[in-house]
Image 1 (cartoon, rainbow, N blue to C red):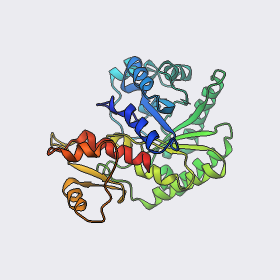
Image 2 (image 1 turned 45 degrees about the horizontal axis):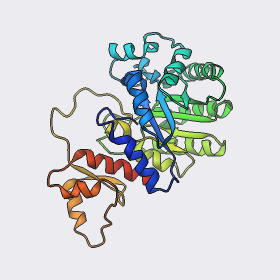
Image 3 (image 1 turned 90 degrees about the vertical axis):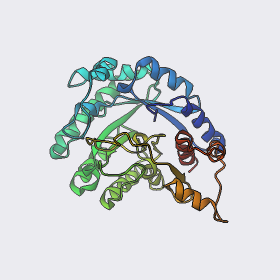
Image 4 (image 1 turned 180 degrees about the vertical axis):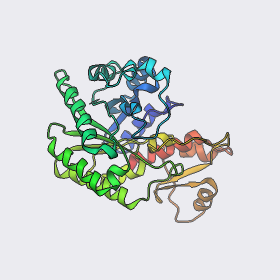
Length: 318
């Protein structure tokens, strides 16, 4: 996922993962259309030459604050992406906005599904996806794009309705499914809700059984885990928003400096710098040989940007 700052480092990072894995890992690059101009998105995707999949996410769920917890949509996003000024969305405009920045995997609008109005909500999202499918030009490919509050996977009734709808709609061979996690999850932490994780597993297993491509944006290690159950790809980024799609909550860091953290590949977890320094003194510790760690550890001051790039590179290698 394209970060909100220091965007220039990500294209090189993608190339480093491809090189480190001898091409065994296929990389994708994704921009969020309402969060930048067409020119900026085009330029960044053009620089991501190591990414064979290019996605321009329309974020249709921004029109659904009643189903997912979000910041209010702002005038700048509507100015950059005028399709957000109308509800219902004009699906033709949504597709064209993705073409304009160079996406090679198009997405349906991605409206959020309301669990309190389950079947009608499903029907609308799939109808929009059908309209998008009908609007493809020769050679274009579409992914079914859904945005779900967590209860769609953690609640058995909602999950069964979702999986039944996915099973019934055979026209979509690629699923791009985003799930919103609770706001209370701390930075870099993964959800521990067993029912939610079981829902992810069921979804991945269905994709495997039905020979569908399942992409899980903004999931970090939780999405990586689903590769073992049948998912095809997961989304991550150097900042927390790329690792988790969480509920919006008022407040924030209050101007406090960021915590110095380091992702330990052998622990599959980020730890504070003091813990990392202690681990490095152990005789059995495995030193990271990524392109960023030598510079990170040679300086006295902690470089958060290098630490984030190490984290993302490690996930690509995983």
